Image 1 (cartoon, each protein chain N blue to C red):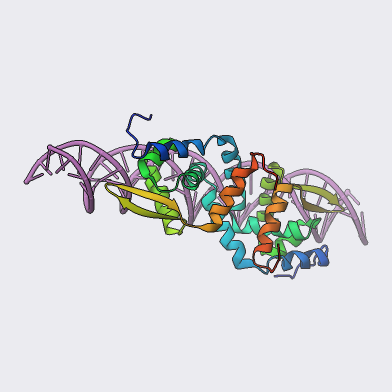
Image 2 (cartoon, chains in turn orange, blue, brown, green; image 1 turned 45 degrees about the vertical axis):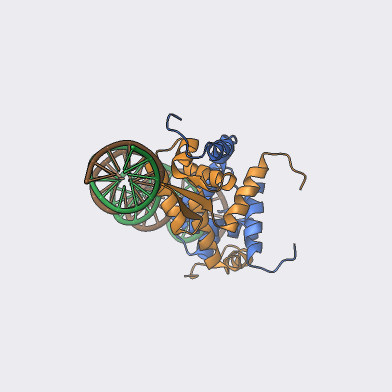
Length: 116
Length: 116
DNA sequence: ACCATAGCTGAACAATTGTTCAGTCGTGAA
DNA sequence: TTCACGACTGAACAATTGTTCAGCTATGGT
């Protein structure tokens, strides 16, 4: 593929070198994709701050239909981001991924005052 | 909308409180959307490590067509993430957003050894 | 057994998106 | 001016995705 002469061979080499961690990049792209939907991101924030919350309470908090929340949670569950646990008729969800927990924490701290 | 009785009123309130920073959440969702495409993320990594790189070199480095790179760069430019500058017939791109610079730096450090 | 509640599921649908194709603009060299 | 090259643009297309709708499962109460 590098048949075409490079405009700046050094830059091209540097750029290529930046992609050694290719698999990691794909992994992060998948993560970002899951974070890219506003409603889903809202759900994650809720799970971050109110772990062990029921689907219907989640739906009420973010203003989504319970069906939509259910679909979103299925996605998050299949990615291992959340865990579920029955409590009577309700099913309580919590954040189960440390990386995401950390990201949400940083994001939440962005607009607040913190000295670190 | 909160006509339906909450399963756990306290949790529901906590969840709702987590969404005070609503606009910030939308903003981040938009950011994450731009980071969610593997190829675009690769491009950003290249721009991060090899600023002032030409489109064709960028395309060669990530294995994309120059057209596709052009489209991606237009998106990033319209979001203010990259800046461009002519040099002869080539157009050199660089990362122009500090937040993204920081994110890419953290991501790049994830798999490497670092003591901080 | 019966019903109401809480949540799940699959199909259908509209909307968004990344890529390719074909053509265009601008720059540099002959 | 003419040509080649690097990059941009718009339309078309396929693929993905978030939501809604209708119906289902499972639990708890009567």
